[in-house]
Amino acid sequence: MTIPESPSKYHYLEPDFSRGLYHIPDYILSSIFQKLDELYGKKTASGCIEEFKRVIQVYHAYKTPVMLEWEKSFTPESRITEKDVMLITYGDLVVDRYEKHLKTLGDICHQYLRGVFNTIHILPFFPYSSDRGFAIMDFRQVDPNLGTWDNILEIKDDFKLMFDGVFNHISSKSFWFQEFLNGNPDFDDFFTAFPADQDIPGEKLSKLFRPRTSNVLTPFHGYHGKKMVWTTFSPDQVDLKFQNPKVLLKMLEIMLYYVRRGADFLRLDAVTYLWDELGSTGAHLSQTHTIIKLFREVLDVVAPHVTIVTETNVPHEENITYFGNGYNEAQVVYNFALPPLVLYTFYMSDATILGKWLKTLKNPSEVTTFLNFLDSHDGIGVMGARGILQDDDISWMAEKVKEHGGLISYRTNPDGSLSPYELNITFYSAINNEDDDEPDDIKIRRYLAARSIPLVISGMPGVYLHGLLGSKNDIESAREKHDNRSINRNILSKDELLRLLDDENSITHCISYTLSRMIYKRVREKAFHPQAPQRVLDIDNRLFSISRISTDGKDVILAITNVTGNSVDCTIDLALHELDFTTGYDILSKKHYEPHHNTFTFTMEPYQVMWLKAM
Image 1 (cartoon, rainbow, N blue to C red):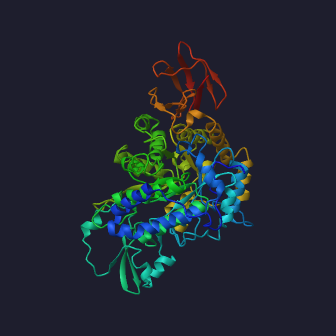
Image 2 (image 1 turned 180 degrees about the vertical axis):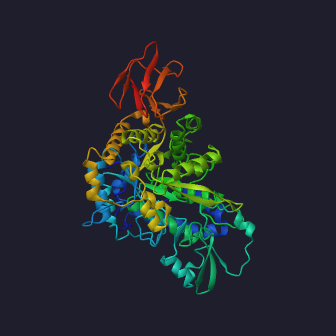
């Protein structure tokens, strides 16, 4: 049997205990116990270590001999290479009235995306009550409106998959929370709740780092009377109480269930807020990092090919703490600073700040990297740029977004004031003003120039489906649903999408075809490996310039992007920048450039992108 890059299809439908239980190494059990001790104390840790052991051994019994054999040859350093590029999409962004949405998604992926993307992130596909899938009612079921687990496994025929671990909270309509309200003692301590008459000092609540403007405590009436329940994100999204080790064990089981069902990447959604504690900021607590380390340790021992990805829309210096020491927490961290910095670069026609920041960006180890993206299902978060851009710059950028037809989501600061948290807009509309009379070809060139940057810097690129298509704002949907984020979640008819993709004159065709072609070329260049060294070159503030050298030192690419709408005369002293070029071959245009006296001299056209490979 041929083993694909991702072997996680190879699980039994039922566990095979006939071969005996998996022997967990003593040092692993000792390390798990130490972390449980940090969270709950020795007595509680002693009481739940056997259950931890059972959950791990049960998962292992599902693994087939084929998968066990494959794991012997797996190396963490090969986890992510230049071939890894992720498409991010909901299961129902493209629909056909005659088939299940996941079947439609699979057909489009197999027909149009093979050879370009090798990983598909299907945003939460579980039954939900709100927040477009992030208020999950049942962690183990596929929303029947989308399809089945079989539909998801069919996508795995050609792609790796990323699932969401929405472990911070659960829907208020879920069985778990309803049983809590019903007074079921099995769920009595699954949620952070206070008696309605308990006096909670306001200064304790004001310390919380909030991603929303809603109240953190929501009243619910149940069997035991009125309770005030912790709801970080919305009244319908009830935080799970990880102070209860039973909750941790449940989420561990669910995590391994996702691995059995095909997850190669596990996105820990909003993991920043995992541990609720009055009197703290509620974010980045040491207990949260300990839980991530526990998840990582379990996966390393029984599912080493699975990658933990942390989604933490916070300032950059806090964001990168989720790498841990480079070996014990997330292997991949969302690069939240990148989208606002790229947008600011093109607004200002100046790459200085972007280049200065990228000079500081390092992979913490040879097994970690960033997920580089420009937009997501939520929009463009700005928290990652705080401390890199001034607050006035972020506020100015938010005003520009509003001029482009976008919306702004705010958060409540500790002093009660509001500040921008997220720019709700498609990236095409953010970077182009739809109301001006600028020619479409200039807008397309500007858009593609911006999209080229995540493709050339160190990391794994991720592209939201509407980003691949160059979609414009869906302001009608945002107004109808009273949800800012719906502006970037327009549902497309499969027939209409295919018509636009086939129409060579449509913006959708021009953008998707050209961007796909760029990615196709990118994944075939060793110099774009996530661990390949990079150097930002100070050539001209109107040009974003970076060199990449393959890990074996054999391939060199000089990537240059004109971030302005004007032509720029460019002179590059190759010796000054320690570059060795006999001839430069632009792998995008297929043109050759000859250096004279070890110097490249040429003109970069407005928003031109050039990837010069040393020949």
